[in-house]
Image (cartoon, rainbow, N blue to C red; front, side, top):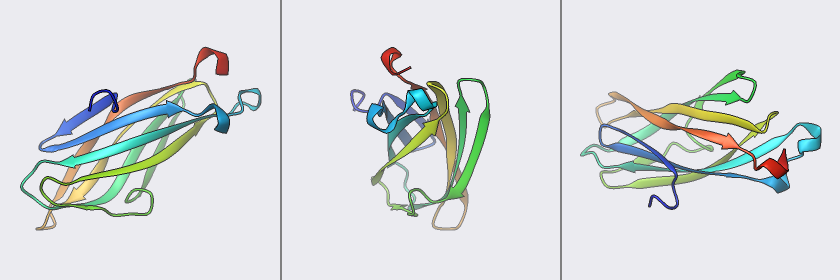
Length: 132
């Protein structure tokens, strides 16, 4: 698992794993545009059924500019994870610098409606030198 997902964070009994890759074919360094794709796996090892409600991202570019992104669910879905379930999705992030980072949290609710905040690990966004 460590080979595929370079970054992970566990909050309680929920683990969020992240694999990130630079996409040169979606990037235009000469125009100041760099693009990364990230694959997220959320693993529910708790005894509760959890529903993902919201996401919060803190995206920082290479100049230190921070952009906070809040939204409902992930890629148009509100996955429900029963005990032992995992959910995977893929999304992307454009930046106007060849380096940056992302981190954040998801808010889940359990069967009783109680909110659970689950950390998304920090992960760097770094274009290869030849793409800069």
